[in-house]
Structures are given as C-alpha cells and as structure tokens.
Length: 288
Image 1: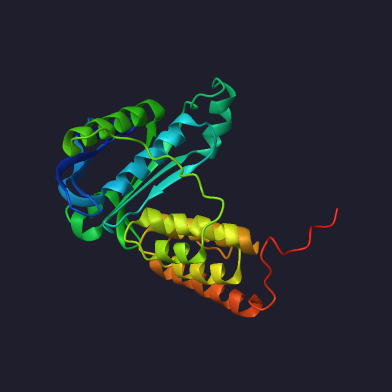
Image 2 (image 1 turned 30 degrees about the vertical axis):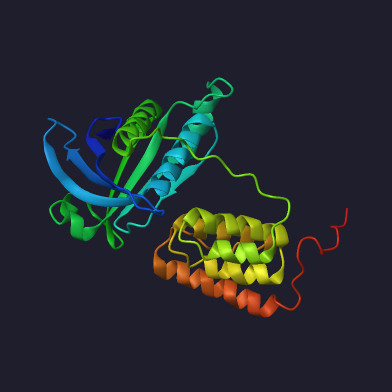
C-alpha cells in the first residue's frame, strides 16, 4: 500500500492496488482502493476516516501522474501537478508553495530537488464521503482534503506506487518519456490520431497541430477543449494559446461550467478572427 503522510502526521492518504484488468486492446484498467484518515491536532485521536473507496485508473493515466510527480520532485522550479482521469470521482493536486520555493532553492544544490513543503489537495465525489464530509468540509460539488507534506515523504510514496504497480501488473514500471515529434505528418494522420481511444494519441495530435498552425488546426483544437481527458484538454488549451496569442482564461481542470464558459469565449474569438487569422509561419516578423 502506497501511503502519503502529512508533515504533521495528522493526515494519512493511501492508494492500494486491488486488481489489474488486462484487455486485448488499450486501455488496461487498474483497480485501486483509496482511503485517508484525519486526526485531531492534539491527542492523536482520529476524527474522520474513509476506507475502501474504489477507483478505476487507466494504466497510462497512472504512469503519467507518477511521471509528472517524479519530475516535480527531481527538477527544481515552481510547479503544480494535477490529475483528473477517466474516473471522475477522484482528483489529486500537488503544488510547490511559492512562498517556500525561493527560500528552499536558495540552499538546494544545483540539479537537486528543493527541500520544503508541498501542498496536497485530494477531491473525491461527495457520494463516497457521506461519513466524513462534515469533517473535511465541502468543496464545490466534491469533498476536499488539503494537507502539507515533505519532499522525502512524496519520494517514499512514489517509490511505493512504482513497486506496487510492478507487483500488480507483473512488469516493471517505466516513467513516460516525451515522444520525438516527426518533422512532417500528413493532416489525415493527425485527424486519425484525434479519433483514437488512447488519450495519449489525442494529446499527440494536439502537439502536431501546433506544427501546422493552420486555421483548420484551430478548429480541431477547439473540439479538443471538450475532450474527456483533462490532459488532452490541457495540451489543446496550451497550443491554442501559443497559436493565437490569447489565453481565454481556459483551465483544463476547472469545473465543467467554467470550462464551457471559456470554450464559448474561444469560439467567439474564432468567429471574429477566423478570416484574418494567419498561421505563425505566414505572419510578418515582429518589428525590432
């Protein structure tokens, strides 16, 4: 069982693999049990707990999550790792505290992770937490648990996750590596990637669209803003921002209503600027 404890030992969060469902085609599903306990500040008495919440994680999503957390640990710099996968009942967010970052990295050796605290937020569907919602408090449509932990404890948690993945899946855990983008890809190939079940293929399509920068790429990226995978939406939003020079206030991990409002802003902008839009390759060079 992979356990992540808060720095004050009041909160214990865990993920335990239950089963692996192998299929002839991707994705492979991993069944995990999630649980946590919350203790009082004094006396160590536990005032809230939830055990046995079942999560269905796609294998590639778990690999992506662990890979991003490893990079957050290994590469100094401000950052946030957010996860909201195919199972909509679970969301995890790990953030470096900006106030701690400058002080921590001032003493950290070059090329090593900064010491200090991390803020961890766990959001779970309220239906899973009827017993503990009054303890940890509501957050929008979900119950939220927030605590601080240390880099050392995060590293231990990641080691446990990788070790237990290897035992459950029967093969070694391998962090994801960024694929090398081909020099040229036919647009028909990009369209085909957008129709794949694997979210990684759809995210790759977003990155390839940045290479073209054409108006039809903007249309496809608009569609990707409503993808089922938050990481595909994240990539589509980032590429759109770079191609158009606009931010639109889009957050791939925001609640659905907020994302829909941002998508309407993008659609309105595109309707207004579609005829005048020039791809980065066709734009005149900026004046010195």
